Image (cartoon, rainbow, N blue to C red; front, side):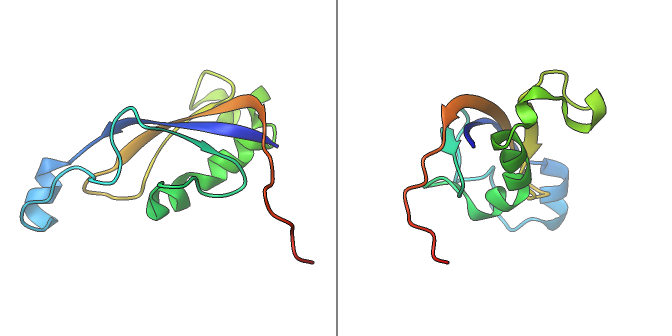
Length: 114
């Protein structure tokens, strides 16, 4: 299993939808900032948003287990092997992430209970 680099590419706010549905004073996501980098292994990285993790973990899992050699979705989504561009599931202010497979091995730092 390999580590996956997660980079925050962009935080957004859909002003039209926020005006109609959002709480007063809603802004782009306050939890993450453009340029932040996290490394994921077998679990959510420290400091990473729980909701964003739920939205992207399946891509992290795929990349960490060897999908870096292939293109996602038959090559009609991302043109670079080992990369996925994903977002969290906040419809008013989604955060956009770049996921990249690395060559660095993951280190399990706990003893599994069986």
